Length: 220
Image (tube, rainbow, N blue to C red; front, side):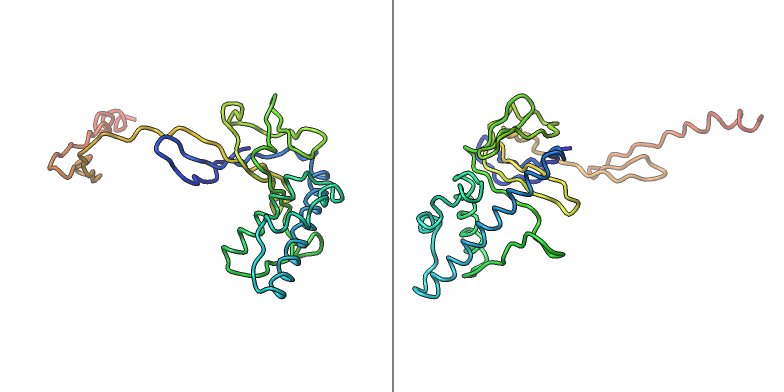
């Protein structure tokens, strides 16, 4: 199952779209483990950024966090690019909401955060109906109804829904359809006596085909 989620932006010739593709359920255990590690990385960035704000009254950038997170991916079982993506996403959301601290990501309990694993463009490869991700030992099988081999894959993420299903969300570039050259328009009003009437005065009479069947119906 795959669904086009949104059109992010458009350029003169191309549009950036986000595709959501269902990942095979057999990978759920491995994805939950990495989502737990992502939550630890997010919470560390959250605490680090807040402590820095308390001391210096300034917000840390993703670049400022790198010396503190260096080597953390190895301990958490994450690729270094994933750790960098977590830092960048944390800083982006903090600026977006104008907060010095974001909510903690909880890995357990009734109010746990749904699984989320950010991915950089260079960390995603598609081959032979499977997606290969940096930091994963094995490729992930998914239902590809769009033919990802036709597109250049951009950045994305892996996310979980409330039913425990996992999805790959990835950006692609698609060529824009040529704009219509039509310069005139007309309105159409459907009716009963007339089949339709247009805004320029044209009326089309309704074709009463059922009248031809009345004798046969009466004889029956």
